[in-house]
Image (cartoon, rainbow, N blue to C red; front, side, top):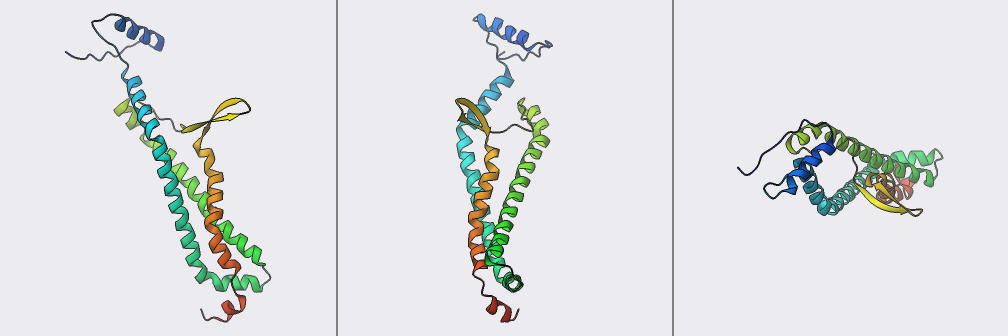
Length: 195
């Protein structure tokens, strides 16, 4: 017999740890907590691959940003007449540019919020299955964090707090080209062109 699984009825985790310590003092057997070992293994694996996963997530967000830019830019040709009408009714070039940038920002932030809600929703939905298979519980509000030295104190900041400023910067960058296209719209040509 190579292993025995003991399910302790002890409600006090310290008592369970003392049982492990008592077994490990001798040289006949070795005791381990499977949940702790699986947690160490998953933390070790995720710790090593966390940077790779973060880089992949950033690349996915950049590709999505490029997709937003292309879709807004392609819609500019269909909306040239609308933009020209706005300008003819008194809207300034800066106002038209701000509308296009706001559209880009709203699309990016809505996508980011939907992604966070979907991700945490899937975590909550799949957590019972993960616990039954591995014994490791992933909480609904568990976040990957990074260390930040703030006012002489070490603070763990969730990566998701970088989401909103990052999305605002990305949306402004990808919305700039379509906004400049709207800014440069020639009112006379757009109004006289046949739709």
